[in-house]
Length: 421
Image (tube, rainbow, N blue to C red; front, side, top):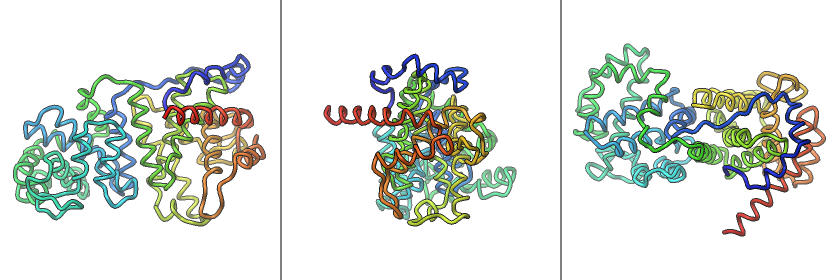
């Protein structure tokens, strides 16, 4: 979605600005410009959740892949492609598909990365010995970039199985080329062994700031921009939508959140930040068991408790990303309620800032409008009636009051987009 159309600005009336100040709006929050890899390095932790891997696994694969490429004397563009490929290698698990390579390729294309990243992504599960899949490639027919990631993935999992980082260090430094050759071939295997001999490698793998290190390594990706931030979060939103089997949901929530914030008089930079939060509201659901997220009936109390973990999981993934501290807080609080009966902290109206109240209403509106296995989708009128009935208790009354106008504006923007082709 990105920056909304000029009609949004018309909604920022003096009355709306007065309303905004009544919400203890202290300062404007603006998106910090960033490169794609800077944001992706942190958000790739969501893929770790989905793959049931230790936190930081995708970042370790990306870092090791980059260093292997360096040992092979590959160029800077190839090294960056391998790093992106390492960050994306587990998107198949996140999207809950059987073809991890195709999923990674789709996300690479959505991120507008180098076309070669998508091509290599399709072979991300292939092996030198031909025992990978699903393409059945072997030997020199496997793209070199995919082999580098295969070697990095092998080493990351090898290290993560160790009970202690010091034991991992000792084990990694005993690895020989013959162990890696079936996975990545003799040349890439030898390069990996060289990388693993350095203490700097071992230290980096357990560095809490590894995503920031990856961001620095990817500095040749062009200038930081807010547009790149929006591209990354929109692509990650697509991954989450695929996981919960509801295509387009994150974009709808993000767009409506932006319009609601604008109707309440928030500055444009603030609206963009809320839009980013809207794309990522359900990021933590990648860490909730599939049996719970895909259950075709109402959840049990225990299953509901598992589902209620998702705001906190998402917030922890976002908190380290550059410029995302407040966005992480909003994501964590989007299931709080004005009456203090929400979760996870049971915050009251006085304790709850405006952004999560906006996100809560946008999220609830589209949840009601969606079909569920145990009920039909609500019409706009029925969804509005439900939200209005809960205004002041479950939902912020002032946000609900501007919802009809925001929905109408969104429909008009979408109609114009369809007409433009």
